[in-house]
Length: 453
Ligand code: TYD
Ligand code: MG
Image 1 (tube, rainbow, N blue to C red):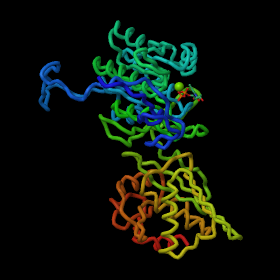
Image 2: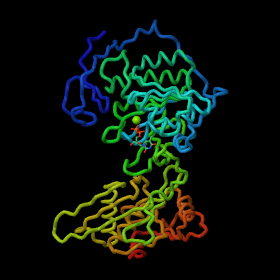
Image 3: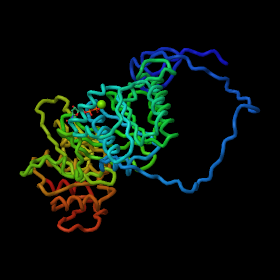
Image 4: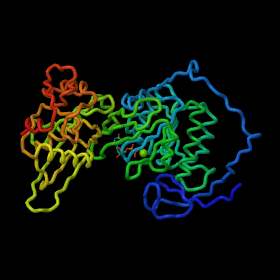
């Protein structure tokens, strides 16, 4: 055995160094290193003649193994999971405080319990009374959930070991759990990792669907080590502006289904309601078209969502450096589009402040938004409204070409379904003609400027 060294573990990313530093060398966070118990280090040389047991090799096509999923009772949750809860899998659910994680999971647990599956809900954050109050508010008090307020993983696993394994086990949250096998306070990297490991092992061995609630740090990653994300099968993030009603459940990693599927909910007086057709949620619902507003048929996974993009341009008199502010889109991408509009279309944004906003607290990641953003910018610059029944989609290249994007046909179908009469997009991806929708293909960005101004 080698003499153990002192170890300092970054509480943000889990990287280990052997001396204290103010800033983590890996993730550049400040004041995140703290000393943890030394690890026993074994000599790296194994004695191969004894000790190890032979492992068994398995064929790839094991008969009779099929993925059987259980519904959570919430179609939107099932959709984000790729079809429902998989037995023996571990799900990590991240999200800002107060976004509705506990509410969502209590609703799901109640549905599972009512459908005859055993559901265990362990709260480490709230007293049982508080959870009961929430259940009352959700009108779910009659659901036969097994509810407990506990934080000791040993106690939890001992108790579960003495009963038939439940179908669903919710741990709210992993940061409040602690194990007496591991040194350190609850929430430290080694505790979080150790507790998660024990719980996941229990879930895998007993075919239990485990949901771990994880806190989110201010930069949006799940607090504690990134390794937690590697340990689980599914990582989900529950997002939304707390001031807005709408919540989006997104899967970031999924070993059993597609990522980038979303579930959409509205937080109401009686908990989270499912929003089956989210397409119109993010439009501002105004009758009179105004300059600087363009509608974009975005895709979230396989699902179209219509969003409104708003641009505002303020001319500056003085030579002060103009501001560019973006909410809901990428700042770098806006700078690029402005440069392309200047270089390829001869428009001048140099002494103007540019503000860009995606309505409804929505965050856009779809590259096909370029054309809609460009349309909003040109419309704001020229103070010319775009017309209320038009949608725009397409990617813009540095050369000013309008490039084809994925799912052109689905975008058009959705726009037609919602009463839009006209779509502008890339010339080469018109898709099948939609009834009631006129499609205009554009090749170059100056074509767009001609249409708008
Ligand atoms: P909660 O599930 O406690 O959030 P998290 O576990 O992610 O921290 O949700 C808290 C918020 O949701 C709280 O601000 C109150 C609101 N809420 C409703 O609007 N309606 C409801 O029916 C419930 C239960 C909560
Ligand atoms: Mg909570």
